[in-house]
Image: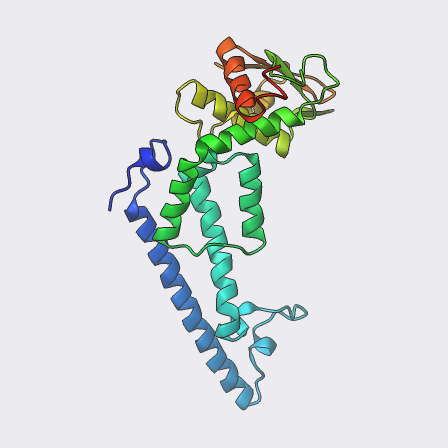
Length: 277
């Protein structure tokens, strides 16, 4: 079965069932070999214990480093843990390399990471991969609009430029950058993610392909800050971003249609309370 890349990612990379089959078959083969290894290690451990040589806990650990090792537990106990750890790493790698993170806003990425960290990890198989990709693609419009709403809610009303009833042509975002004796750097966290969310919805409004998460505005702005030590202004097709030593950034929308499109999103979500005012 061939999966059209446009249907799933809207990127030029080809993500098809052959890739999925290689990942799933490799994962299943690895888990099978790990379980065989556990049985073999258990048998060897029993043999050495019977002749007085101690078990694997005694002879397989470095001297002074008797830490627990999952491979020395029973298969029934350890295989679910190892499977979950491998699946967690596979999902992270798959989402990153496929560009599918581009279809998540900051809130969705936080929830996805929380699910992975807390063990709520869907098994790696073709059905789950395709279902996840298709669901992300199907809900991208709703997700992107949520990113805009969360960005709007995060703006400080202490600045006159930040209107509490609509997006102005310029918004001011606090703590987007940091400044030290080594110069500027782009901060990690929600503020950076919200800038990416803003670029996604603007691209969607403009009818352009979604920016890949490996080359989005946060990556480009970060590269600019490192390369242009004397400059405090970043420019692209959509934004002019001027950043200051106190950490704030003035983000100016270059086209009126961007401001109008963002306010249309606010009107849909808050028809009486916000933009319609």
